Image (cartoon, rainbow, N blue to C red):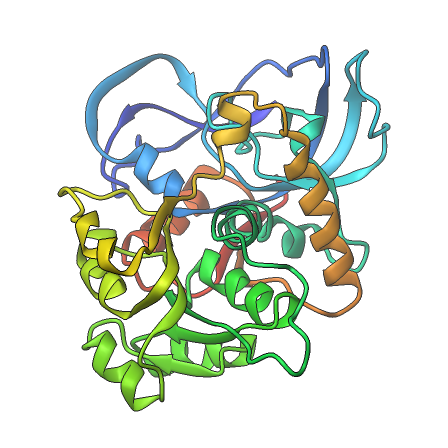
Length: 341
């Protein structure tokens, strides 16, 4: 089968950073599906894993954690899917990734693809959707059911609203949970993007967040979701979080975080890492498949929309290097997708 792989961790402008290769087609066992990949998407995790370092892989390593495709074969213990099903998923960071014609994936972390979407539209969704869903509903414990009309809507500050996770988190927060969303964006095109997705307020993450929130009428917010530069934004998040509020981040920190800033407010801080369930084979792994099915229904009912913003074709090393380079600029809006080998 065709695949894109690496053996060295090199700058993305080096042709050997990601290269085309032929690998053996795998066979499913246990609860694995063998999926024929039709489209993939690129995420910051791909860039982080591929970032230059001295490690040399003894065998070619395939990255990629966003895919949409068709089930070609199933393991003997599979119960949720059959050959021919159209599926989408993010996969497992401890296993070979989706940048290949065929991939094995545990059925528990796979969802039925939205019927109304193309493969490339669907491939934009899984990793960011799982991350946003888990951050909002599992980590921050936000109710996925809007409060009664007589109850004031709670507020959430989403830092990094125009990126892949932010683009889904805004929609889930507004259209599923009924929250009042303040998203950050720093350019006219990214501000338009987050407003089109439903953000009621927009502020600039390069400015004074507390001052800008006050200008928008918010002394505090009930929740903060940090999707960019935790080191930079945590002090401001601690300052604007409401008493007994919650902060969640998906971005690792380089310096120690001063969580004592939250003590007087009895506020909480929690991480979201979407690979936790598959990495540790948690008892609730199936929740990822379930939530992808729920999101597919939201898509098909026109409640939320796909976040694809650029499509490259075919799926090959040259186009994948182009997508990685675009993400490395830090200015990508929505998702970059590749389709067709």
